[in-house]
Amino acid sequence: MILLLMWKIGMVIHRLHLASNLGCQELVRKLLDNYTVKVNQKNGNGRTALFFATQKNNTPMASLLLQYHADPNIGDFDNDVPLCFAAQHGNTEMIDSLLRHGAQINVIGKDGHTPLAIAAAQGHANVVNYFFEQEGYAIDVDYINNRGDTALMQAAAHGHAKVVKILLGCGSKYLSC
Image (cartoon, rainbow, N blue to C red):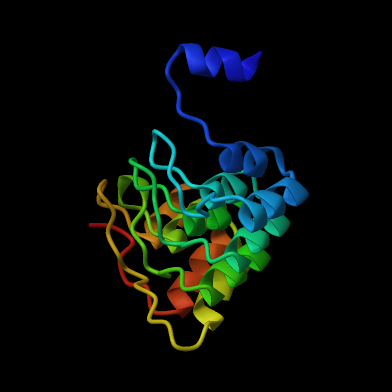
């Protein structure tokens, strides 16, 4: 019924996206192994199967798609990207998998937010720490988003004292503009 409604209103939905969104790993594997389904195929909003897996916080599905060479840097038309969803969910396991498969750590997502800023705003101290522990990455701790906020400002505005302390310890300078 839902698929019929989506078809009637003109939404493009692909088998791989549906299987990913529903968490059907075996179906995803079969589609990618046996058919001409492209792992990075976009829907009408520019979203990929990996987008849906990270949006749903489904680490096993995201890992499966990455094994099939899903591109972790493809964003949708709003500039939402998989690493931003993983940061929003506080999921360091998924973040690790995305980074190992080439995700850009300083990617600028929706409204100019970086994964660091998203984690800071959510109070995910584990993710903020994780980002700074990664060797070979230069985290832009003082990046200013479209609203003029930094990760430090967002953490402070939401009352996340532990995150504020981490960011100050990592060299953040801008609490106000």
